Amino acid sequence: MRKFLEIAHDSNQYRQACLLRNAVLRQPLGLSLYDEDLDAEASYRHFGVFVGNELAGCLVIIPLESNKVQLKQMAVEDEFRGKGFGRLLLEEVQECLIASGVKEIRLHARETALGFYERLGFVGEGARFLEVSIPHQVMWKRIRQD
Image 1: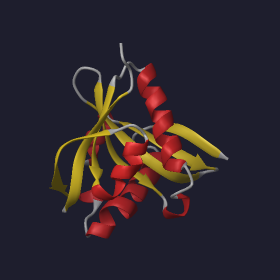
Image 2: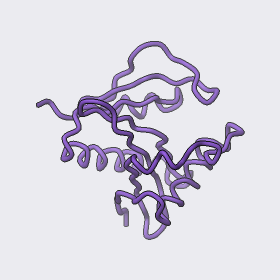
Image 3: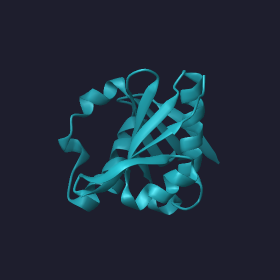
Image 4: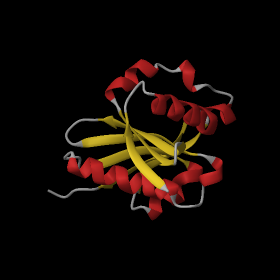
């Protein structure tokens, strides 16, 4: 059974999320998440989708100015890709953000993930650019109109 949770910073679930983010997003590029300043993440919101006690996917939300946030480092475990876990995670996070008064989500999408975000209503903005040595594009989605 799938379970969606907001994850407390510096909890066991947060440490699981860091391991997943590192394995999926950094190690394939020869990088390490642990070279970054993870203390700064104490002020971010962390979310995960679980199957039992196993973390299937996670993402980070960074508060920006005036009811906007940045979605960062969305990662789904290999065995759960293509099975709706990423969509579920993002849809549940959107509901939490709407309830918190957030109006817009921004993100830097890897070129390989553009289609995923487009199918969920995100719109590309500007030219593509390199980040962590691979092509990305800024994308955004308005989730609340008022």
